[in-house]
View 1 (cartoon, rainbow, N blue to C red):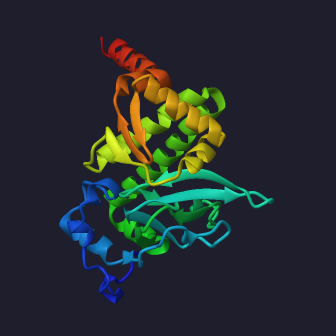
View 2: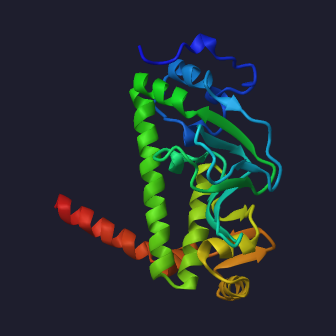
Length: 259
């Protein structure tokens, strides 16, 4: 057996095991048995909470682990030679961070807390050994990496080919879906990041972001008070983002293929 001797790992910091975590269905395989989850519990390290602005890791750091956001939120970003930040992603509870470093074993970007954030650390070499013994865990890791690649490709497509309005609509719908997966409201939520970070991520100037939010409110698509967002017309946002059109095409192709 190539996996680690799990009895060697100390789990005193795991006061709330993954098996009893409200987020386990988001960041862990649904098919894991109780025994498998106990093995995974044994390698998970609960880190002390990060405070707002504190780094989880920096670009160029050696890759040692992937991280699950337990509460709070993170942003990932790169830094230009002139010291300017380029936001590359936002990470909410139940989501994994650090998967993009697996290929090179070096973190290509930095990750910092947007608010007080609790993290579970999964040492990658131990996780890799364990995954070789638990096929469902291995499949889930591959699925998560595939999902991250797809999400990155979709956002790159949006940035390159979409208007400013379409970009914002896509991002708001993405947040809606992600909050919904956590069992929270998909229409009323608080964004943990400043609009300047949102604009940075979408490649839009601050004044453009302000104008877009004002226009979306005037059109009756949303209501915004500071970081509190209420989506009033999700179908309109979906149509604006082009998502509904893509879903219609996918449905038609599926129907044609099954007739």
